Length: 381
Picture (cartoon, helix red, strand yellow):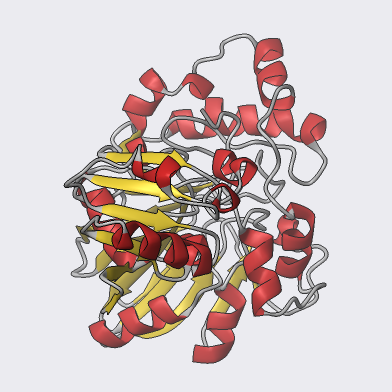
């Protein structure tokens, strides 16, 4: 599909380019503050920022920096500005020029399913990578049934995936009450007649019915089960929950990431939850098998994406290399997780209230609330 020799590139196509480490030159025409806050990144991606308004009188400032012969993608917030600039670049004689369909909003919402593994009971485990937001959700498939953990609010990708694999949704689960993105768990459960599970300590203020997660009460999906252990792994929130799948995979929610640890301040209770966070990371998790494969609910940098886009790491290796797991002094740990934290997620208070059922924003309001990086980790650099 072309417009004045300009081609459209979808968020899915950009994702494949990033995951395959193909070369791409990006001209981001959003304002400087938005660009500095959040941008498309990749190992083979070169990117520059020239605000749209600086190009209205002519695109020479852009042409001077765009390499000849490279695939060029122009990006803006919603699409319109990038299409205009891309057309001007093409009119100046450049070829292989694209603009991002739907802008950064579409980039923020795209989900890429990545297979984690075949499970011992004959089932499968998939990770859904929300590459533009850093969110990770999971689907367990077994014997015609499915369970989804930490789903995003965009439920269509999960629905299409389940239809392709011929499975029925029986469980949706949130490891905790999310503050960076709106959960699709309740909406999915309502649409497909599934059971929605939440940790009760995070659900004190919710306005809807849910199934309590209880330690020792495994959740069955066909011939597979999500072993609820340790159910009580607080620190990011007071009810943060972990799951072990097939005795091999540890779903850590926002407690532990590959290169950092979860922040305890998004409910305004950092000082109260520091001890819980340390206990979970330095005792509960420490007593688990080092061979468990950690599957977190978020990633911070594109460098954390492995083969095919999978975000995972061996627990024993994380204890060797993750700085958040190697702070021996308790006072220093407390200081690390309560001071000099990265900015809090955009609209995190409103997102928490939405996930409690207290707010019902429309689709566009939900998009605006979620724009930007997730910022659930102690370190974002």
